[in-house]
Image 1 (tube, one colour):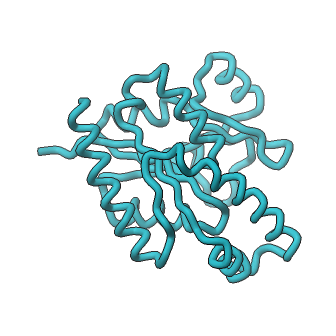
Image 2 (cartoon, rainbow, N blue to C red):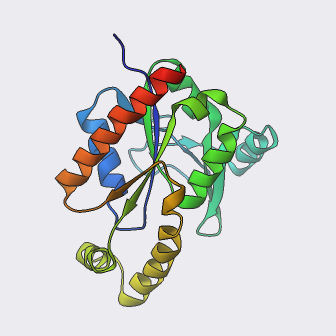
Image 3 (cartoon, rainbow, N blue to C red):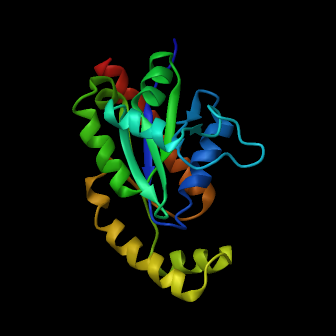
Length: 200
């Protein structure tokens, strides 16, 4: 019996490990792939349109917006836009492919709103929030050595705001080790598939 395809929408503060979890899910479960999102930024060396992102010019992005083709989109760093086309979710799911996407809490809210217009998404979507306690989150951010203390303080403020949204999610993972978090995610996948199978 083929497994019912699901859409897993994962959110959590910076440093929560959400991207690592999504990457591992795709690497270890062939039935899952990443949602290919869309951007107006130029491709970097080695990036392939349709694999890493759908690369659009600002004019093409505007055209898609006018057609209401996006489930969600946002300005990032002031001058670039990123978004998720409905077709990037619906086409793979209709082909039997499960999907995972890592977005911020605003993106998840946009997905929830979009699901009101797309019954397929409403039936297949499961939202997951990763909670990390304050000290562990600060330690992880320092461990990445990518941000100075001011940047970390700013990210922690954002994290506190995001944590208040946790109760709106279908599932919450209280982050511990990478393996424990991944085991929790696999359990959620099992439950999400059971739920989706009932509504198919």
